[in-house]
Image 1 (tube, rainbow, N blue to C red):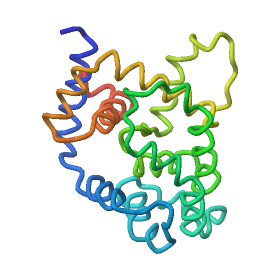
Image 2: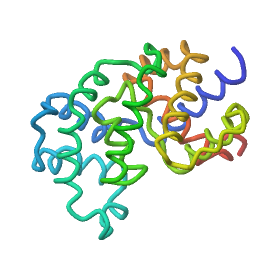
Image 3: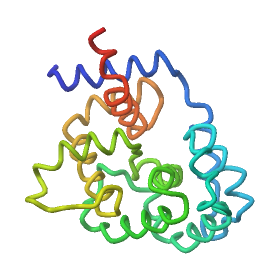
Length: 215
């Protein structure tokens, strides 16, 4: 077992020990799976998406700002407008696709949601709808991945938290998942969670609690 596998397992172990099960997370995913995206309403967003973002995602302070007033109704409109491609992504796994074939769709979905609920909440919503396709990020995770990927951009300058930035993030996550495919699969089975959720636990811990690994 190499160092990377050991690090992933230790970070996930500590995260699971401290935070345990994801009742709100898993319950919200199950409810959203039953929703017909073509007919999603503001009421459905308030019933499923809002608790997910506020209770699990801790986005209440951000979404409570005046510039996000009426985000629930606006988000329902955006989901309906993107329902065809989102329905396709619902049944796809990030490891099993040629991501370049979907760059335009990924960026369009992200931009639509970002203008409605912001750069972090937009990804949480995309993940809620398509939990095996869209990986989660927050400020710390995005910065960490961005720093590691910068040497592979051939001098390309990408605006932070833009659609191009999120697409590049997805490519990096796909590479990471593929490199440690077996360990993420093993941990997902062990904890009865999706691989992208296990990956998020690892990235969150290593970026937010790095000293816990040595203290």
